[in-house]
Length: 97
Image (cartoon, rainbow, N blue to C red; front, side):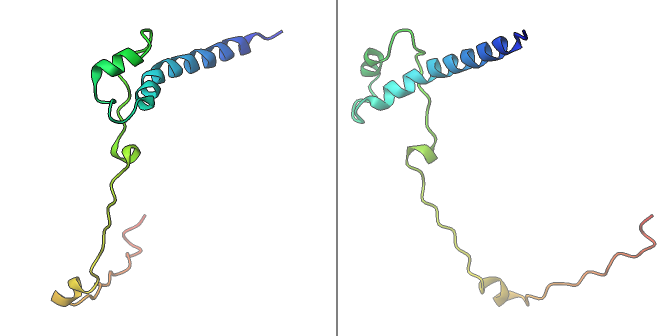
């Protein structure tokens, strides 16, 4: 009987356990009320002692994000110069080999 799947299953279980261990402080941090999240003493009391001391910092996109609107004034470039696109000559057949 082939027992290679034991190693694969063990490796997957080990990676899953390490991921859960690393995420425990973040889950603890976000379960705190928003007013108490930035107080280190409250977080230290709520965090299990076996868990890592630092939680994951969320980027702006996960914190609530930034609403960025970009627009283009399409007539502005044409007002200064003619908007003609220069034509390129087709490549000559002698340049390719």
